[in-house]
Image 1 (cartoon, rainbow, N blue to C red):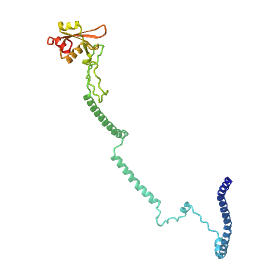
Image 2 (image 1 turned 135 degrees about the vertical axis):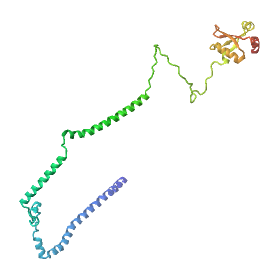
Image 3 (image 1 turned 90 degrees about the horizontal axis):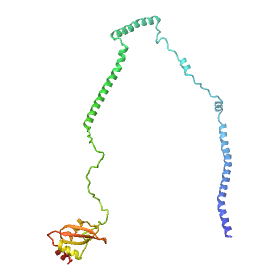
Image 4 (image 1 turned 60 degrees about the vertical axis):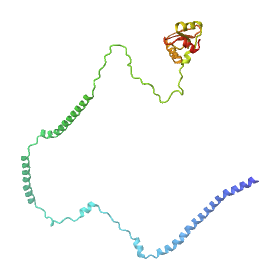
Length: 283
C-alpha cells in the first residue's frame, strides 16, 4: 500500500509541468485569434480617413511617373556646341606652306652643325667603352687575391716545423721508461690498513735447546732458532736486530723433515753468543 501511494504522488509531480505547458499553449492560441480581429477594428478608421483625401491627390497618384533616360556620353559630346570660328580664325593654306618652308631649313642646318662638330662614332669604339670598366674591375680583384695569397703563404711558412724522423735499425720496439707518479687517492679504499703478515714476532718462533745447538753456541758463536717457513734470510737478520739488538754476520737455513724451518744465526765478534743465550734464557 505504501508503495502504491508513493507511486501515485510521483506520477502527479511528473504530470504537473505537462499540464501547465498545455494551459500556456491554449492561452497563446486564443491570443493569436483575437489579434487579427483587433487589427481589423483599428484599420477601419484608417480606411475612412484615406477616403477623405481630395480628388487632386488621387489624380496625382493615378498619373504615371515620367521616365528619365540617361543619355550616352558619346551623344552628349557630339551635341556640345562647337566653338565659333570668330575666336580662332582658320589659317589659310598659303600661310601654312610659308611656315613649313621657313622652319624646315632651320632644322636641317642645326643637324648639319651638330654632325660637323661631333666625331663619327665607330661601332668598335662604342663597344670598347663598356668592357674597359669590366677589365679594370677584374684586374683590381685579381691583384687583391694575389696579395691575400701572399699573406697566407707567409703565415704558413712561419708556422711550419719540420719533424725529424728517428731511424730505427732493430725490429723490436721497447717502450721508453716514463714518469710514474705515486697514487694519491682522495679517500682510503679500505677502512683499516692491512697489517704485515710477517712481523718480527712471527718470523722468529722459538729457540732450539738441544745439545747440538748448545755446542754450536759455545764453539761457533751461533744461535739456532725455529723460524717461519715464509721468512727469508734478510727478514731473519732484521728481526734478530729488532728483538735482541744483535748484529748477525751470516744466516743459514734448512727445512726439517717435519716441515719446520731452522735458522743458524752466526753473530759478529762484537757479540758473544753465550751472553745472548743467558739473556734470552736458553742456559
